[in-house]
Length: 257
Ligand SMILES: Nc1ncnc2c1ncn2[C@@H]1O[C@H](COP(=O)(O)OP(=O)(O)OP(=O)(O)O)[C@@H](O)[C@H]1O
Image (spheres, rainbow, N blue to C red):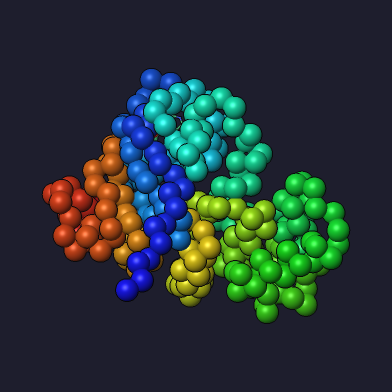
C-alpha cells in the first residue's frame, strides 16, 4: 500500500496577537496552512478575517498603528523577525482582492508587470509567462487575440481571473484571496471556484469568504473567527457537519452574523 506524502507546511501561525493602536483585533490566533490545500476563513463582519489574511504577506504593515506579537512562520521563517525582504515575500505570497483591480494597461502588460520588476526582460520568456498563466486561469482562449487591448475592457469575472494570472506570474507559493467572488455573478463565481480547485494542485490557498456554501464546497480546512479569536479550526467537513463549539454551529446555521 502506498502512503501519501505529507503535505508541506506553508504557514504556521502561533499565538498571533494584533492591535490597531489600543484596539485588540486578533487574539492568540494559531493556524497551520498546508501546501495543496484550500484554507477558508469564515466569521461575521468585523471578526478579523481581513486583518488576519493581510498579516500573511505583511500587507497589514501598511495600516497605521499596527502592533503584533507571536509568530507567523512562513516556510519556517518568522515574518515578525525584522529581516524579511518584503518585495520577495509579496512575490511568493500573492494576494487577490474582492474586486479585480487590473492596472489600466493592456492584458499583456498586466501580467508581465511583476516578472519585469523581478528582472525578466526577454520577450520570448515574457510571452511564455503570459500564455502559461492565462491558460492556468482558463482565460487564454477568451483573450489570446486581444492581448494588447486594455484590461479594463474585460468583464468583472475576466478581470478577476486576470488578477489571479497576474499573481501567478511571479511564481508564488501561496495565493491569498480576500472575498474574491463577492462582486461576481454566479457563473463567474463558479469559474473562480473551479479555478481554485485546479490551483490548489500547485499552491497553498487561503481564502476569506462570507459565503458558507463556497467554504464548504471548495475548502479542505476551515477556521471560524469570532471577535478576533479562532473559535474552531478543523477539516471543512467536520466544521460544517459536526462542529465542536455551539457558536460555530449557530454561525454556520445562520443564527447570527
Ligand atoms: N486600519 C484599522 N484601524 C483600526 N481598526 C481597524 C482597522 N482595520 C480594521 N479594524 C477593526 O478591526 C476589526 C476587524 O476588522 P476586519 O476588517 O479584519 O474584519 P472582517 O472580519 O474582515 O470584516 P468584514 O467581513 O466586514 O470585511 C474591526 O473591528 C475593524 O473595525
